[in-house]
Length: 134
Image 1 (cartoon, rainbow, N blue to C red):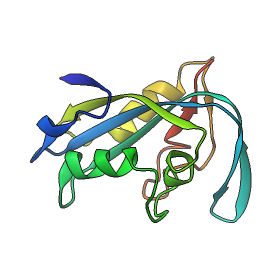
Image 2 (cartoon, one colour):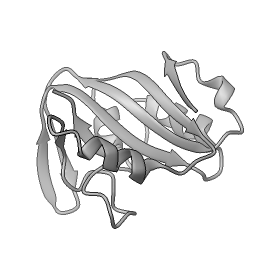
Image 3 (cartoon, one colour):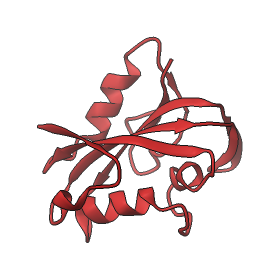
Image 4 (cartoon, rainbow, N blue to C red):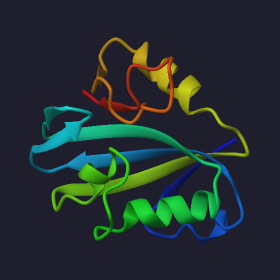
């Protein structure tokens, strides 16, 4: 089951774990660091796929992504902390770790551009977990 959350109301995810999909809009380009290289992320709509199975689960992770002020830990933090980033909506898949499967399906859509090496450092099968929509 996939739920689409709009706006900052994500309280019902308290106690739940699962996979999430962030739908974001970047109003201006930004430079991000991916491992040892700098990449320019251009203006546009993006999809980022992640999972939350640790302490706090989905509620904790999603609240973190919605905050602008935080320590930059994950690649996606470089985007979500930007003044130019707006999280438009969030999709969730409850109780299933499917970030790689979702990423693989998105990567097969020919018109979608992947940002190579972004957000997939803990996985060996994906080229990316961030995609720019046309």
